[in-house]
Length: 305
Length: 294
Image 1 (spheres, rainbow over the protein chains, first blue to last red):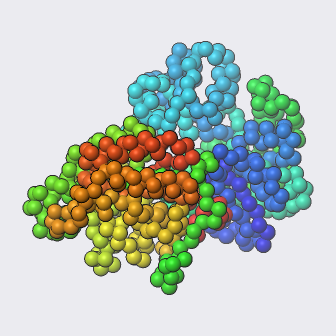
Image 2: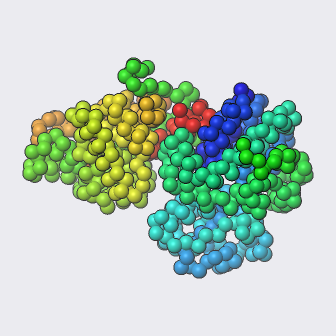
Image 3: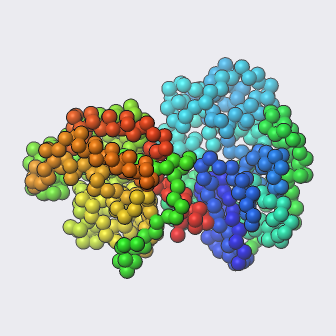
Protein backbone atom coordinates (compact mmCIF):
# COMPACT_ATOMS: atom_id res chain seq x y z
CA UNK A 1 0.00 0.00 0.00
CA UNK A 2 1.40 3.40 -1.01
CA UNK A 3 0.52 6.36 1.19
CA UNK A 4 -0.42 9.65 -0.44
CA UNK A 5 -1.29 12.83 1.42
CA UNK A 6 -3.88 14.93 -0.38
CA UNK A 7 -3.68 18.45 1.06
CA UNK A 8 -7.09 20.06 0.71
CA UNK A 9 -7.64 23.80 0.61
CA UNK A 10 -10.77 23.57 2.75
CA UNK A 11 -12.54 21.06 4.95
CA UNK A 12 -13.50 17.67 3.49
CA UNK A 13 -16.98 18.79 2.45
CA UNK A 14 -18.99 18.79 -0.79
CA UNK A 15 -16.13 20.62 -2.47
CA UNK A 16 -14.19 17.35 -2.38
CA UNK A 17 -17.12 15.04 -3.02
CA UNK A 18 -15.29 13.16 -5.77
CA UNK A 19 -12.40 12.22 -3.50
CA UNK A 20 -14.73 11.33 -0.66
CA UNK A 21 -16.90 9.19 -2.90
CA UNK A 22 -13.91 7.24 -4.21
CA UNK A 23 -12.46 6.86 -0.73
CA UNK A 24 -15.70 5.58 0.74
CA UNK A 25 -16.17 3.14 -2.14
CA UNK A 26 -12.67 1.85 -1.37
CA UNK A 27 -11.41 2.58 -4.88
CA UNK A 28 -8.09 4.02 -3.75
CA UNK A 29 -7.35 1.19 -1.36
CA UNK A 30 -8.29 -1.41 -4.00
CA UNK A 31 -5.60 0.20 -6.16
CA UNK A 32 -3.08 -0.14 -3.32
CA UNK A 33 -3.27 3.55 -2.40
CA UNK A 34 -3.75 4.80 1.14
CA UNK A 35 -5.05 8.29 0.33
CA UNK A 36 -5.17 10.61 3.33
CA UNK A 37 -7.28 13.75 2.97
CA UNK A 38 -5.57 16.48 4.96
CA UNK A 39 -7.94 19.36 5.76
CA UNK A 40 -6.81 22.93 5.33
CA UNK A 41 -5.73 24.68 8.49
CA UNK A 42 -6.18 28.39 9.02
CA UNK A 43 -3.56 30.84 7.77
CA UNK A 44 -1.70 28.23 5.71
CA UNK A 45 -0.92 28.03 2.03
CA UNK A 46 -1.83 24.56 0.75
CA UNK A 47 0.98 24.76 -1.81
CA UNK A 48 3.48 24.74 1.06
CA UNK A 49 2.54 21.09 1.62
CA UNK A 50 4.50 20.34 -1.57
CA UNK A 51 7.72 21.43 0.11
CA UNK A 52 7.66 18.20 2.14
CA UNK A 53 9.45 15.18 0.84
CA UNK A 54 7.16 12.33 0.00
CA UNK A 55 4.03 11.69 -1.96
CA UNK A 56 1.88 14.77 -1.64
CA UNK A 57 -0.84 16.24 -3.85
CA UNK A 58 -2.09 19.71 -3.02
CA UNK A 59 -5.37 21.31 -3.98
CA UNK A 60 -5.02 25.05 -4.45
CA UNK A 61 -6.24 28.03 -6.43
CA UNK A 62 -4.27 28.55 -9.62
CA UNK A 63 -2.73 31.85 -8.53
CA UNK A 64 -1.12 30.20 -5.49
CA UNK A 65 0.46 27.60 -7.74
CA UNK A 66 1.67 30.28 -10.15
CA UNK A 67 3.11 32.28 -7.28
CA UNK A 68 4.86 29.21 -5.90
CA UNK A 69 6.38 28.28 -9.23
CA UNK A 70 7.38 31.84 -9.95
CA UNK A 71 9.13 31.93 -6.58
CA UNK A 72 11.16 28.88 -7.56
CA UNK A 73 9.15 25.97 -6.18
CA UNK A 74 9.46 22.96 -8.54
CA UNK A 75 5.73 22.22 -8.73
CA UNK A 76 3.27 21.40 -11.49
CA UNK A 77 -0.51 21.43 -11.88
CA UNK A 78 -1.87 18.10 -13.12
CA UNK A 79 -5.63 18.71 -13.20
CA UNK A 80 -8.29 21.16 -12.07
CA UNK A 81 -11.24 19.99 -10.03
CA UNK A 82 -13.01 23.29 -10.73
CA UNK A 83 -13.08 24.94 -14.11
CA UNK A 84 -14.00 28.28 -12.58
CA UNK A 85 -13.73 30.05 -9.29
CA UNK A 86 -17.05 29.95 -7.40
CA UNK A 87 -16.52 33.51 -6.30
CA UNK A 88 -19.24 35.98 -7.24
CA UNK A 89 -21.46 38.73 -5.93
CA UNK A 90 -25.01 38.92 -4.73
CA UNK A 91 -27.51 41.73 -4.35
CA UNK A 92 -31.11 41.97 -3.23
CA UNK A 93 -33.36 41.12 -6.17
CA UNK A 94 -35.39 44.29 -5.58
CA UNK A 95 -32.26 46.40 -6.22
CA UNK A 96 -32.34 45.47 -9.90
CA UNK A 97 -28.58 44.84 -9.84
CA UNK A 98 -27.71 41.98 -12.17
CA UNK A 99 -24.13 42.69 -13.18
CA UNK A 100 -21.07 44.63 -12.10
CA UNK A 101 -21.98 47.31 -14.63
CA UNK A 102 -25.18 47.87 -12.67
CA UNK A 103 -22.99 48.64 -9.68
CA UNK A 104 -21.56 51.83 -11.16
CA UNK A 105 -22.01 54.58 -8.60
CA UNK A 106 -22.84 52.01 -5.92
CA UNK A 107 -21.00 50.22 -3.14
CA UNK A 108 -19.67 46.64 -3.30
CA UNK A 109 -18.54 44.79 -0.17
CA UNK A 110 -15.69 42.31 -0.59
CA UNK A 111 -13.03 40.40 1.36
CA UNK A 112 -9.34 40.57 0.56
CA UNK A 113 -9.45 37.33 -1.44
CA UNK A 114 -12.11 38.76 -3.76
CA UNK A 115 -10.25 41.83 -4.90
CA UNK A 116 -8.54 40.10 -7.81
CA UNK A 117 -11.85 38.84 -9.24
CA UNK A 118 -13.63 42.15 -9.05
CA UNK A 119 -10.70 44.13 -10.46
CA UNK A 120 -10.31 41.62 -13.25
CA UNK A 121 -13.95 41.90 -14.28
CA UNK A 122 -13.90 45.69 -13.99
CA UNK A 123 -10.82 45.74 -16.19
CA UNK A 124 -12.50 43.39 -18.67
CA UNK A 125 -15.51 45.72 -18.96
CA UNK A 126 -13.45 48.92 -18.85
CA UNK A 127 -15.05 50.01 -15.59
CA UNK A 128 -12.82 52.59 -13.92
CA UNK A 129 -11.71 51.99 -10.33
CA UNK A 130 -13.55 55.03 -9.04
CA UNK A 131 -16.84 54.02 -10.66
CA UNK A 132 -17.63 51.38 -8.03
CA UNK A 133 -16.93 51.98 -4.37
CA UNK A 134 -15.26 48.86 -3.04
CA UNK A 135 -15.12 48.33 0.72
CA UNK A 136 -13.98 45.47 2.93
CA UNK A 137 -16.80 43.91 4.94
CA UNK A 138 -17.50 41.32 7.62
CA UNK A 139 -19.55 38.18 7.18
CA UNK A 140 -23.05 39.35 8.16
CA UNK A 141 -24.08 39.47 4.52
CA UNK A 142 -27.83 39.53 5.10
CA UNK A 143 -27.60 42.43 7.50
CA UNK A 144 -25.19 44.32 5.23
CA UNK A 145 -27.57 44.04 2.27
CA UNK A 146 -30.72 44.68 4.28
CA UNK A 147 -29.31 47.76 5.98
CA UNK A 148 -28.09 49.21 2.69
CA UNK A 149 -24.51 49.30 3.97
CA UNK A 150 -23.58 47.77 0.61
CA UNK A 151 -25.56 47.37 -2.60
CA UNK A 152 -23.91 44.03 -3.33
CA UNK A 153 -21.51 41.73 -1.51
CA UNK A 154 -18.96 39.10 -2.41
CA UNK A 155 -20.01 35.47 -1.97
CA UNK A 156 -19.23 31.92 -2.93
CA UNK A 157 -22.16 31.39 -5.21
CA UNK A 158 -22.87 27.82 -4.09
CA UNK A 159 -22.82 28.69 -0.38
CA UNK A 160 -23.99 31.99 1.10
CA UNK A 161 -26.82 32.67 -1.37
CA UNK A 162 -28.37 29.31 -0.46
CA UNK A 163 -28.13 30.11 3.23
CA UNK A 164 -29.71 33.54 2.76
CA UNK A 165 -32.43 32.20 0.49
CA UNK A 166 -33.31 29.73 3.25
CA UNK A 167 -33.79 32.78 5.48
CA UNK A 168 -36.23 34.29 3.01
CA UNK A 169 -33.95 36.63 1.06
CA UNK A 170 -34.67 37.10 -2.65
CA UNK A 171 -31.33 37.55 -4.32
CA UNK A 172 -29.69 38.23 -7.64
CA UNK A 173 -26.53 36.10 -7.80
CA UNK A 174 -23.67 36.94 -10.17
CA UNK A 175 -20.93 34.30 -10.57
CA UNK A 176 -17.72 36.07 -11.55
CA UNK A 177 -16.94 33.57 -14.31
CA UNK A 178 -19.97 34.73 -16.28
CA UNK A 179 -18.23 38.08 -16.58
CA UNK A 180 -14.95 36.69 -17.78
CA UNK A 181 -13.16 35.85 -14.54
CA UNK A 182 -11.58 32.58 -15.58
CA UNK A 183 -9.57 31.11 -12.77
CA UNK A 184 -9.04 27.40 -12.15
CA UNK A 185 -9.70 26.34 -8.57
CA UNK A 186 -9.01 23.28 -6.51
CA UNK A 187 -6.17 22.62 -8.89
CA UNK A 188 -4.25 19.45 -8.11
CA UNK A 189 -0.53 20.10 -7.98
CA UNK A 190 2.49 17.93 -7.22
CA UNK A 191 6.23 18.37 -6.92
CA UNK A 192 8.32 17.81 -10.05
CA UNK A 193 10.10 15.07 -8.12
CA UNK A 194 6.86 13.17 -7.48
CA UNK A 195 5.76 13.75 -11.07
CA UNK A 196 8.98 12.29 -12.42
CA UNK A 197 9.17 9.38 -10.00
CA UNK A 198 5.56 8.13 -10.05
CA UNK A 199 3.72 9.00 -13.28
CA UNK A 200 1.76 5.75 -13.36
CA UNK A 201 0.65 6.20 -9.77
CA UNK A 202 -0.48 9.75 -10.44
CA UNK A 203 -2.42 8.67 -13.47
CA UNK A 204 -4.13 5.99 -11.38
CA UNK A 205 -5.04 8.51 -8.69
CA UNK A 206 -6.48 10.94 -11.21
CA UNK A 207 -8.42 8.20 -12.93
CA UNK A 208 -9.99 7.13 -9.64
CA UNK A 209 -10.59 10.73 -8.56
CA UNK A 210 -12.33 11.76 -11.77
CA UNK A 211 -14.47 8.64 -11.67
CA UNK A 212 -15.23 9.51 -8.08
CA UNK A 213 -16.43 12.93 -9.19
CA UNK A 214 -18.67 11.54 -11.89
CA UNK A 215 -20.21 9.02 -9.52
CA UNK A 216 -20.60 11.59 -6.74
CA UNK A 217 -22.55 13.83 -9.10
CA UNK A 218 -24.78 10.87 -9.97
CA UNK A 219 -25.29 10.00 -6.29
CA UNK A 220 -25.42 13.35 -4.58
CA UNK A 221 -27.55 12.22 -1.65
CA UNK A 222 -25.28 9.24 -0.93
CA UNK A 223 -22.04 11.20 -0.96
CA UNK A 224 -23.62 13.99 1.10
CA UNK A 225 -24.63 11.58 3.82
CA UNK A 226 -21.10 10.12 3.84
CA UNK A 227 -19.67 13.60 4.23
CA UNK A 228 -21.72 14.14 7.39
CA UNK A 229 -21.37 10.63 8.79
CA UNK A 230 -17.66 10.16 8.17
CA UNK A 231 -16.00 13.53 7.75
CA UNK A 232 -17.94 16.60 8.84
CA UNK A 233 -20.50 15.76 11.51
CA UNK A 234 -20.90 19.47 12.20
CA UNK A 235 -22.62 20.01 8.86
CA UNK A 236 -25.96 18.97 7.43
CA UNK A 237 -26.46 16.39 4.68
CA UNK A 238 -29.33 18.22 2.97
CA UNK A 239 -27.30 21.43 2.83
CA UNK A 240 -24.23 19.61 1.52
CA UNK A 241 -26.38 18.05 -1.21
CA UNK A 242 -27.86 21.39 -2.17
CA UNK A 243 -24.44 23.03 -2.35
CA UNK A 244 -23.00 20.15 -4.37
CA UNK A 245 -25.80 20.55 -6.90
CA UNK A 246 -25.01 24.26 -7.14
CA UNK A 247 -21.34 23.32 -7.58
CA UNK A 248 -21.86 21.28 -10.74
CA UNK A 249 -21.37 24.13 -13.26
CA UNK A 250 -18.01 24.89 -11.71
CA UNK A 251 -16.86 21.27 -11.95
CA UNK A 252 -18.04 20.74 -15.49
CA UNK A 253 -17.40 24.19 -16.94
CA UNK A 254 -17.29 24.12 -20.71
CA UNK A 255 -15.47 20.78 -20.81
CA UNK A 256 -18.36 18.74 -19.41
CA UNK A 257 -18.47 15.78 -17.09
CA UNK A 258 -16.50 13.56 -19.45
CA UNK A 259 -13.46 15.85 -19.32
CA UNK A 260 -13.34 16.74 -15.65
CA UNK A 261 -9.89 18.03 -14.74
CA UNK A 262 -8.95 19.45 -18.15
CA UNK A 263 -7.02 22.73 -18.23
CA UNK A 264 -6.55 25.19 -21.13
CA UNK A 265 -2.98 26.34 -21.66
CA UNK A 266 -4.23 29.72 -22.94
CA UNK A 267 -6.15 30.33 -19.73
CA UNK A 268 -3.03 29.67 -17.67
CA UNK A 269 -1.10 32.06 -19.91
CA UNK A 270 -3.70 34.77 -19.40
CA UNK A 271 -3.67 34.26 -15.64
CA UNK A 272 0.11 34.53 -15.55
CA UNK A 273 0.02 37.72 -17.62
CA UNK A 274 -2.65 39.18 -15.36
CA UNK A 275 -0.55 38.40 -12.29
CA UNK A 276 2.52 40.00 -13.85
CA UNK A 277 0.47 43.08 -14.73
CA UNK A 278 -0.91 43.32 -11.19
CA UNK A 279 2.51 42.81 -9.62
CA UNK A 280 1.52 39.51 -8.03
CA UNK A 281 4.56 37.72 -9.43
CA UNK A 282 7.96 39.13 -10.23
CA UNK A 283 9.21 36.47 -12.59
CA UNK A 284 7.07 35.73 -15.66
CA UNK A 285 6.79 32.02 -16.40
CA UNK A 286 5.45 29.96 -19.26
CA UNK A 287 2.24 27.99 -18.86
CA UNK A 288 4.12 24.90 -20.02
CA UNK A 289 6.36 25.17 -16.97
CA UNK A 290 3.52 25.06 -14.54
CA UNK A 291 0.82 22.76 -15.87
CA UNK A 292 0.42 19.56 -17.77
CA UNK A 293 -2.60 17.79 -19.21
CA UNK A 294 -0.64 14.61 -19.88
CA UNK A 295 -2.60 12.56 -17.37
CA UNK A 296 -5.99 13.97 -18.24
CA UNK A 297 -5.23 13.33 -21.90
CA UNK A 298 -4.21 9.74 -21.39
CA UNK A 299 -7.11 8.83 -19.16
CA UNK A 300 -10.03 7.34 -20.98
CA UNK A 301 -12.54 9.40 -19.10
CA UNK A 302 -15.49 7.54 -20.52
CA UNK A 303 -14.42 4.33 -18.80
CA UNK A 304 -16.22 3.32 -15.65
CA UNK A 305 -14.32 1.61 -12.88
CA UNK B 1 -6.80 6.94 30.40
CA UNK B 2 -8.81 6.60 33.56
CA UNK B 3 -12.17 5.43 32.21
CA UNK B 4 -11.67 1.74 31.38
CA UNK B 5 -12.32 0.86 27.75
CA UNK B 6 -14.42 -2.02 29.07
CA UNK B 7 -17.10 0.53 29.96
CA UNK B 8 -17.72 0.92 26.26
CA UNK B 9 -16.03 4.16 25.37
CA UNK B 10 -12.47 5.05 24.45
CA UNK B 11 -10.89 8.34 25.40
CA UNK B 12 -8.10 9.78 23.31
CA UNK B 13 -6.25 12.97 24.04
CA UNK B 14 -4.83 14.60 20.93
CA UNK B 15 -1.06 14.74 20.67
CA UNK B 16 0.47 18.07 19.69
CA UNK B 17 -2.74 19.88 20.46
CA UNK B 18 -2.81 23.44 19.14
CA UNK B 19 -5.24 26.32 18.88
CA UNK B 20 -5.87 28.38 15.75
CA UNK B 21 -3.65 31.31 14.77
CA UNK B 22 -1.01 30.45 17.32
CA UNK B 23 -3.23 31.14 20.33
CA UNK B 24 -2.01 29.44 23.49
CA UNK B 25 -5.37 28.71 25.05
CA UNK B 26 -9.09 29.03 24.40
CA UNK B 27 -11.98 30.35 26.39
CA UNK B 28 -15.64 29.58 25.69
CA UNK B 29 -18.07 31.18 28.09
CA UNK B 30 -20.84 28.72 28.84
CA UNK B 31 -24.23 29.49 30.36
CA UNK B 32 -26.81 26.96 31.51
CA UNK B 33 -30.11 28.70 30.92
CA UNK B 34 -32.08 26.42 33.22
CA UNK B 35 -34.92 28.85 33.90
CA UNK B 36 -37.72 27.07 35.72
CA UNK B 37 -36.59 23.67 34.48
CA UNK B 38 -34.24 23.14 37.40
CA UNK B 39 -37.01 23.66 39.91
CA UNK B 40 -39.49 21.54 37.97
CA UNK B 41 -37.06 18.67 37.43
CA UNK B 42 -35.93 18.74 41.06
CA UNK B 43 -39.44 18.52 42.43
CA UNK B 44 -42.42 17.87 40.12
CA UNK B 45 -44.67 19.33 42.83
CA UNK B 46 -43.06 22.69 42.13
CA UNK B 47 -45.45 23.21 39.24
CA UNK B 48 -47.47 25.57 41.46
CA UNK B 49 -44.60 26.65 43.71
CA UNK B 50 -44.40 30.18 42.41
CA UNK B 51 -41.39 31.23 44.45
CA UNK B 52 -39.26 28.30 43.30
CA UNK B 53 -40.28 28.86 39.70
CA UNK B 54 -39.70 32.60 39.80
CA UNK B 55 -36.17 32.15 41.11
CA UNK B 56 -35.36 30.26 37.92
CA UNK B 57 -37.40 32.54 35.66
CA UNK B 58 -35.36 35.51 36.83
CA UNK B 59 -32.42 34.07 34.88
CA UNK B 60 -34.33 34.14 31.59
CA UNK B 61 -36.54 37.21 31.81
CA UNK B 62 -34.31 39.55 33.79
CA UNK B 63 -30.70 38.41 33.71
CA UNK B 64 -30.30 37.00 30.21
CA UNK B 65 -30.88 40.30 28.33
CA UNK B 66 -28.13 42.03 30.27
CA UNK B 67 -25.85 39.02 29.92
CA UNK B 68 -26.36 39.23 26.16
CA UNK B 69 -25.59 42.94 26.30
CA UNK B 70 -22.38 42.20 28.22
CA UNK B 71 -21.24 39.66 25.62
CA UNK B 72 -22.03 42.06 22.80
CA UNK B 73 -20.41 45.04 24.43
CA UNK B 74 -17.19 43.17 25.20
CA UNK B 75 -17.16 41.23 21.94
CA UNK B 76 -17.03 37.89 23.72
CA UNK B 77 -19.01 35.03 22.16
CA UNK B 78 -21.02 32.77 24.42
CA UNK B 79 -22.52 29.30 24.41
CA UNK B 80 -25.99 29.02 25.90
CA UNK B 81 -27.27 25.57 26.85
CA UNK B 82 -31.05 25.35 27.02
CA UNK B 83 -33.38 22.70 28.37
CA UNK B 84 -35.67 22.33 25.34
CA UNK B 85 -38.69 23.21 27.47
CA UNK B 86 -37.19 26.61 28.27
CA UNK B 87 -36.31 27.20 24.62
CA UNK B 88 -39.84 26.26 23.61
CA UNK B 89 -41.27 28.78 26.08
CA UNK B 90 -38.81 31.50 25.00
CA UNK B 91 -38.14 31.03 21.28
CA UNK B 92 -37.40 34.67 20.60
CA UNK B 93 -34.58 34.69 23.13
CA UNK B 94 -32.96 31.68 21.47
CA UNK B 95 -33.21 33.31 18.04
CA UNK B 96 -31.82 36.58 19.34
CA UNK B 97 -28.80 34.81 20.79
CA UNK B 98 -28.17 33.13 17.43
CA UNK B 99 -28.56 36.40 15.56
CA UNK B 100 -25.90 37.84 17.84
CA UNK B 101 -23.49 35.09 16.87
CA UNK B 102 -23.72 32.89 19.94
CA UNK B 103 -23.85 29.12 20.10
CA UNK B 104 -26.90 27.23 21.37
CA UNK B 105 -26.49 23.84 23.03
CA UNK B 106 -28.88 21.26 24.43
CA UNK B 107 -29.38 20.73 28.14
CA UNK B 108 -32.08 18.09 28.39
CA UNK B 109 -35.79 18.69 28.07
CA UNK B 110 -36.56 19.59 31.66
CA UNK B 111 -33.03 19.40 33.10
CA UNK B 112 -33.20 15.65 33.69
CA UNK B 113 -30.31 13.80 35.25
CA UNK B 114 -29.99 10.73 33.01
CA UNK B 115 -29.31 8.52 36.02
CA UNK B 116 -32.96 8.99 37.03
CA UNK B 117 -34.07 7.61 33.64
CA UNK B 118 -34.05 4.22 31.94
CA UNK B 119 -31.93 4.11 28.79
CA UNK B 120 -35.10 4.01 26.73
CA UNK B 121 -36.50 7.09 28.49
CA UNK B 122 -33.16 8.81 28.08
CA UNK B 123 -33.16 8.17 24.33
CA UNK B 124 -36.71 9.41 23.93
CA UNK B 125 -35.98 12.60 25.86
CA UNK B 126 -32.87 13.18 23.78
CA UNK B 127 -34.81 12.78 20.53
CA UNK B 128 -37.67 14.99 21.64
CA UNK B 129 -35.55 17.75 23.15
CA UNK B 130 -33.12 17.79 20.23
CA UNK B 131 -35.95 18.11 17.70
CA UNK B 132 -37.58 20.93 19.67
CA UNK B 133 -34.37 22.89 20.12
CA UNK B 134 -33.40 22.52 16.43
CA UNK B 135 -36.88 23.71 15.43
CA UNK B 136 -36.75 26.71 17.75
CA UNK B 137 -33.21 27.61 16.72
CA UNK B 138 -33.82 26.99 13.03
CA UNK B 139 -30.48 25.26 12.76
CA UNK B 140 -28.67 22.07 13.61
CA UNK B 141 -27.69 21.94 17.28
CA UNK B 142 -24.17 20.62 17.71
CA UNK B 143 -23.55 20.21 21.42
CA UNK B 144 -24.84 19.12 24.77
CA UNK B 145 -24.00 19.72 28.39
CA UNK B 146 -25.27 17.40 31.09
CA UNK B 147 -27.85 18.58 33.60
CA UNK B 148 -26.42 17.92 37.09
CA UNK B 149 -23.44 16.27 35.35
CA UNK B 150 -25.15 12.95 34.67
CA UNK B 151 -23.32 11.20 31.83
CA UNK B 152 -23.05 7.50 31.03
CA UNK B 153 -22.23 5.43 27.95
CA UNK B 154 -25.75 5.59 26.52
CA UNK B 155 -25.71 9.38 26.94
CA UNK B 156 -22.62 9.81 24.81
CA UNK B 157 -24.01 7.41 22.22
CA UNK B 158 -27.27 9.34 22.06
CA UNK B 159 -25.38 12.60 21.48
CA UNK B 160 -23.49 11.09 18.52
CA UNK B 161 -26.60 9.42 17.10
CA UNK B 162 -28.39 12.73 16.92
CA UNK B 163 -25.53 14.23 14.92
CA UNK B 164 -24.12 16.45 17.64
CA UNK B 165 -20.35 16.85 17.70
CA UNK B 166 -19.51 17.76 21.27
CA UNK B 167 -20.26 17.09 24.89
CA UNK B 168 -19.35 19.64 27.52
CA UNK B 169 -19.64 17.70 30.78
CA UNK B 170 -16.54 15.60 31.52
CA UNK B 171 -13.36 16.72 33.20
CA UNK B 172 -10.30 14.58 32.51
CA UNK B 173 -7.94 16.88 30.61
CA UNK B 174 -7.10 20.57 30.31
CA UNK B 175 -7.38 20.39 26.51
CA UNK B 176 -10.41 19.08 24.63
CA UNK B 177 -10.23 15.40 23.79
CA UNK B 178 -11.97 12.76 21.73
CA UNK B 179 -14.38 10.11 22.92
CA UNK B 180 -14.92 7.12 20.69
CA UNK B 181 -18.32 5.51 21.20
CA UNK B 182 -19.96 2.58 19.45
CA UNK B 183 -21.92 5.14 17.40
CA UNK B 184 -19.03 7.40 16.41
CA UNK B 185 -16.59 9.95 17.77
CA UNK B 186 -17.40 12.96 19.89
CA UNK B 187 -15.37 15.96 21.02
CA UNK B 188 -15.25 16.42 24.77
CA UNK B 189 -14.89 20.03 25.90
CA UNK B 190 -13.81 19.62 29.50
CA UNK B 191 -15.54 21.54 32.26
CA UNK B 192 -14.51 21.97 35.87
CA UNK B 193 -16.40 22.45 39.13
CA UNK B 194 -13.98 25.33 39.71
CA UNK B 195 -15.67 27.21 36.88
CA UNK B 196 -19.21 26.27 37.88
CA UNK B 197 -21.10 28.97 39.75
CA UNK B 198 -23.52 26.55 41.42
CA UNK B 199 -21.13 25.40 44.19
CA UNK B 200 -20.44 29.08 44.89
CA UNK B 201 -23.82 30.77 44.50
CA UNK B 202 -26.32 27.92 44.15
CA UNK B 203 -29.43 27.99 46.25
CA UNK B 204 -32.52 25.92 45.55
CA UNK B 205 -35.74 26.92 47.28
CA UNK B 206 -37.59 23.68 46.71
CA UNK B 207 -36.20 21.15 47.25
CA UNK B 208 -33.93 23.18 49.46
CA UNK B 209 -30.24 22.96 48.71
CA UNK B 210 -27.06 24.96 48.23
CA UNK B 211 -25.82 27.77 50.42
CA UNK B 212 -24.62 30.28 47.89
CA UNK B 213 -25.82 33.59 49.20
CA UNK B 214 -22.93 33.81 51.64
CA UNK B 215 -20.19 34.18 49.02
CA UNK B 216 -19.21 37.45 47.40
CA UNK B 217 -18.86 37.89 43.66
CA UNK B 218 -15.40 39.26 44.34
CA UNK B 219 -14.35 35.92 45.85
CA UNK B 220 -15.91 34.02 42.94
CA UNK B 221 -14.23 36.19 40.35
CA UNK B 222 -10.93 35.73 42.14
CA UNK B 223 -11.28 31.96 41.74
CA UNK B 224 -12.20 32.32 38.07
CA UNK B 225 -9.37 34.78 37.47
CA UNK B 226 -6.88 32.38 39.07
CA UNK B 227 -8.03 29.64 36.77
CA UNK B 228 -7.74 31.97 33.78
CA UNK B 229 -4.22 33.03 34.74
CA UNK B 230 -3.29 29.39 35.24
CA UNK B 231 -4.65 28.54 31.83
CA UNK B 232 -2.50 31.23 30.26
CA UNK B 233 0.56 29.75 31.95
CA UNK B 234 -0.12 26.07 31.30
CA UNK B 235 -2.41 26.24 28.25
CA UNK B 236 -5.69 24.45 27.71
CA UNK B 237 -9.37 25.17 27.48
CA UNK B 238 -11.56 27.21 29.79
CA UNK B 239 -15.31 26.97 29.78
CA UNK B 240 -17.70 28.15 32.44
CA UNK B 241 -20.88 26.66 33.80
CA UNK B 242 -22.64 29.82 34.77
CA UNK B 243 -26.34 30.16 35.42
CA UNK B 244 -28.11 33.40 34.50
CA UNK B 245 -30.24 33.28 37.66
CA UNK B 246 -27.05 33.09 39.78
CA UNK B 247 -24.22 34.99 38.10
CA UNK B 248 -26.66 37.21 36.21
CA UNK B 249 -27.64 38.95 39.46
CA UNK B 250 -26.71 42.63 39.27
CA UNK B 251 -23.82 42.70 41.70
CA UNK B 252 -22.30 39.50 40.38
CA UNK B 253 -22.59 40.48 36.74
CA UNK B 254 -21.02 43.80 37.61
CA UNK B 255 -17.95 41.89 38.85
CA UNK B 256 -18.03 39.56 35.88
CA UNK B 257 -17.83 42.57 33.56
CA UNK B 258 -14.60 43.54 35.26
CA UNK B 259 -13.22 40.03 34.97
CA UNK B 260 -14.03 39.84 31.27
CA UNK B 261 -12.48 43.22 30.67
CA UNK B 262 -9.31 41.88 32.32
CA UNK B 263 -9.39 38.70 30.25
CA UNK B 264 -9.81 40.64 27.03
CA UNK B 265 -6.39 42.20 27.56
CA UNK B 266 -4.65 39.02 26.44
CA UNK B 267 -4.40 38.32 22.75
CA UNK B 268 -2.89 34.88 23.25
CA UNK B 269 -6.34 33.59 24.22
CA UNK B 270 -8.89 32.50 21.63
CA UNK B 271 -12.34 33.72 22.70
CA UNK B 272 -14.69 31.34 21.02
CA UNK B 273 -17.87 29.29 21.30
CA UNK B 274 -18.07 25.63 22.24
CA UNK B 275 -19.22 24.87 18.69
CA UNK B 276 -16.21 26.53 17.09
CA UNK B 277 -13.81 24.99 19.61
CA UNK B 278 -15.25 21.54 18.84
CA UNK B 279 -15.03 22.14 15.09
CA UNK B 280 -11.40 23.07 15.54
CA UNK B 281 -10.74 19.84 17.43
CA UNK B 282 -12.39 17.86 14.64
CA UNK B 283 -10.16 19.65 12.14
CA UNK B 284 -7.13 18.50 14.14
CA UNK B 285 -8.52 14.98 14.33
CA UNK B 286 -9.10 14.93 10.59
CA UNK B 287 -5.49 15.91 9.99
CA UNK B 288 -4.33 13.03 12.17
CA UNK B 289 -6.74 10.50 10.70
CA UNK B 290 -6.35 11.51 7.07
CA UNK B 291 -9.80 12.93 6.45
CA UNK B 292 -12.48 10.85 8.08
CA UNK B 293 -13.29 11.03 11.79
CA UNK B 294 -12.55 7.57 13.06
